Image 1 (cartoon, rainbow, N blue to C red):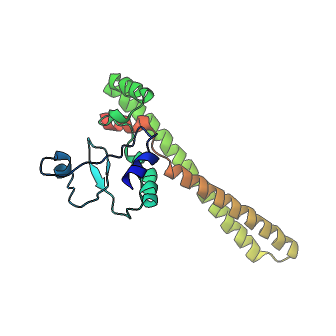
Image 2 (cartoon, rainbow, N blue to C red):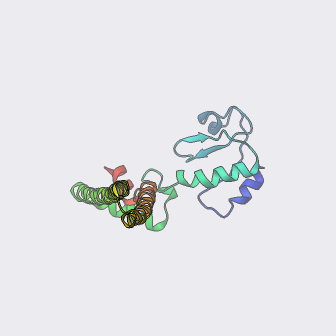
Length: 187
């Protein structure tokens, strides 16, 4: 299984599938509490390692690796060995900034993100209000023509709410910009 897993990720430079023999002289095993075999440790060898506790079949291991491992191996100041050339240049630029410049840039970027979140949240709130208003109009419609118009407006309102919620979910799932993360790490 392990050779097949290594082969499946051989083209990914940020993932290393390695085998080690754990005996009393192996510091990796003692430092990372390897006490059962086989074990699947994941993470950054220069930081902390996690324990995979799922099934040990190839498909489960591939699924876990593809969904989780690359998320842990991202560019950071402390883990710059995971950075590409462009990211290393960004780190260099950030390190050359004065603390005042960095604070100012951080605040501007953070406020821009907050404004984007607030705008998305306001769209969801407005769509909910529109749907509630449409439902109220349908409830109070005395004539058939008004009821049909209210029903059409309810359908439009539901679609607007669905779209606004989907956009909000996408925004919330988006990773924080790397530049902001790196500034936080340097501050």
